Image (cartoon, rainbow, N blue to C red):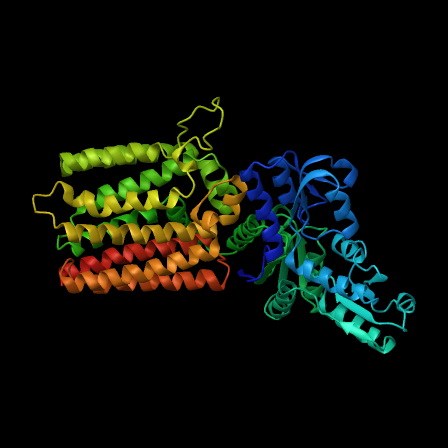
Length: 582
């Protein structure tokens, strides 16, 4: 079964902004309790998560007396805002900027005495809030064929018509056409947001390429239901689900091509679980050889076997950069170190972020936790033993690195101690994960292989190889953090993208690749490293291509994408080995 994922699936800008505002709010220690006035967004699973973090929903202004109040993404009326302002509360406005723009348009025309028509569902919270701005009169129209309602619109003054931001384009156009025939002084504002337009347009395209469209999102979400209607209007079977558990394999019987889209309030982890479920159903139709090979590849990524091979590849590249032969022993030590540290830290990590970032991996570790823990421990011991075979200094260095790695997720401050420090383990230090992982790999790949060598160490070359290895791993880990940003926010993990933002992280990663490429070229020209440095520029170009893929589309198969990223590190080793043999 072929699966396509809509590029526009998932949180829109306004929803993402609202959810991030609430999650970030907790870090600033605001007045308690924290409540949202009405559901923040239309997604039950997200609301349950917020409630589990102590962020409750209230539906009446009378329930609010103190603490912090978050205005929902759909916005509220001016009258409700005034009531809130009179209370002893801190107000956080999470109104979507697109909705705020519609409010401004209505306010402007109401001040001029114009009547306002909102093309939208009158019971939707966004529309109820917008009506509050129509001080000169207004109404909501959900069906342009409701002539009785249109007859009540005055003809002797200006009429402003706007759209609910998630309205279907076809309905808005029909309403404008009907109003044009009645109202001589009509001011039309197509306020359907770009996200809604793009989603509906993409469903139109996918309908021509698919036998079924699965729409993921809350059953009470208006924009999600409209995506279903758009698909059905093309005669395509549409399946609207909130969770992966609602997908019945029999509903996909005989289906060869299925597309997935999602409403503006649907979080990534729900989409990922639906993808995993569809992949599971699709695999059942493949022959055994394909299933076995694909499962082996997936397990290799999930257990960090491929990452370990990437560590070995970086080690080989660093040795050749320094003019040394790629000996098997340092490669084996680095691979065992990378494998064991990532595996054990994944097992020890209790934050739960993996449940939201990669549900398939979370399920795998839940099933095989004991075996993987034993395998990780044995690999650590093997790395230490082999490092002492390399030499005394190498042995002490690997021992120190293993101990440090094991303590990364271990609680250093007892849970009974008041949390005045804000962190209990090294992983709780804001932004610590990416630089620490990069430093660990960099030391293992560049310094460890030469520290016990009888050959004199060339400091400039050693420094360049360390920066190359650490920089490549920093890029790899930071891109993974970008992919995981939604789940990391939910569990309160402060990675670099969360601390400095997605755009700045993107600029940082682009600048890093340019810097690494220039460093390799300049240092090879200066003779600090061998001329294989020119060849390894190819690896920075490959990472650049992966970044373009990340920026331009959703990653449908996360495991395959991560496997390709680690494959680039393996490629660096192969290029180095081939150069050494030439």
